[in-house]
Length: 211
Image 1: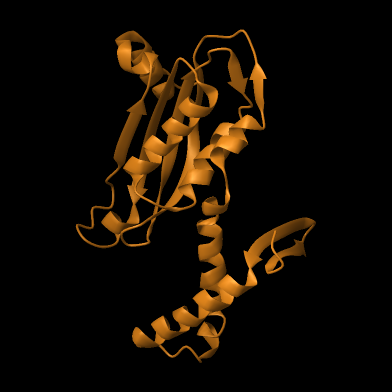
Image 2: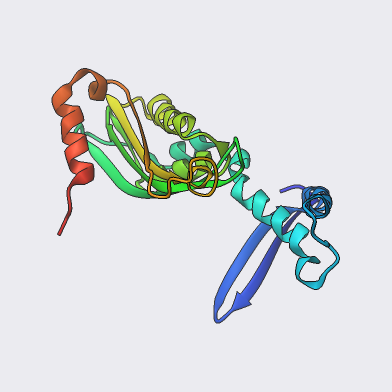
């Protein structure tokens, strides 16, 4: 953490919220947003907007904090040798990201599987890898490939499968305004590419219910 990075804790009903932000970046982004408010026809000096530029700057820094994370190191921090070679599936991982074209959110779920080849990884690390890539300006296609490649290159498994399903506010709120559209992307390596039965088993597992 640099000298300009600040950790700020706020206690409320026994819950402590900790925000990490860079003061120089916050000040610079907030200044631009104050100008943007004026360009939009608003009065940035009115009561309801006085702190809006700073709030937006802090929100954007949080929503793009994935640039400061190293997804491969997240995986390596919890890699274990294990004689297990069956499919490992982590499904329904929440995804929140920002479209790089309009800087509007897209959100949904990721379903990820890998087949170990001598090493497994702590299960909590897979959702953290998703967050590390999602908390950047993204397109869903690249996000899908980045998650796949990180797991493949770090764990060297026999195969990786990634499916992401998201709604994009750039489609729902503007443009074609199709509010119920869902975009699905997929990316596979190894056994998931070469073996139809393995890929079909993955797709069956991510749509199955435990009820």
